Image 1 (cartoon, one colour):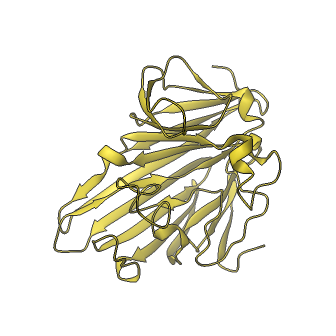
Image 2 (cartoon, helix red, strand yellow; image 1 turned 90 degrees about the vertical axis):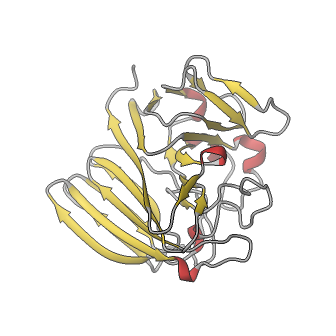
Length: 281
């Protein structure tokens, strides 16, 4: 179902789109390349509805939060309407700025006031900045993530280089809670890990003959996720086998790496993607 609040982007270097419901980047495709951002086959774009796909903004908690009791999952802002502030085209592409005022997202389970701004650049590279301003008179403590769904040819045929030696927390039930990455990350089962490093990493995709470089600024974590077959069957907007064509690689500050801001302070987290033409590396 198409969204009535979508901003379509098309310039000499790339195409893309943002849905104002959640401020979600639902497309980015550099000229001459396959789509980089993955969307579920049956998304329902509507205020108050979360979708699988795009680059949702996770804030002010990740998952069920550090207490394990927060709701909705992944925070308050990914299902709220954002406001377009400006859109600028230049020789390097198109930049879009959206904002969300905390006065619209007060919640009894989480205390704090803030203003959010996201600046997204669509060109031959992709960049998303999340700017958090503490507009309250008390300390603001939050988790955040650029929850990027990346399109791949087949998740079992890709590998992620750059995590070797990085410790991670494992969120898959029945598996060890802690681990240390040895070599490249390859996928053979459900994967849900919070890595204690911020990149850069490179996703090599032989099937698409390309590499995606994921880099970040002011992040302590990379989250890597694929639900695999059984869990994906519980998602209404997936189809059989949809899980094969996606993997999430997310720039994040979560759990013990949550951010604390004093009144009036601002924090900026940046998530970036760049495409190479070769899957070798």
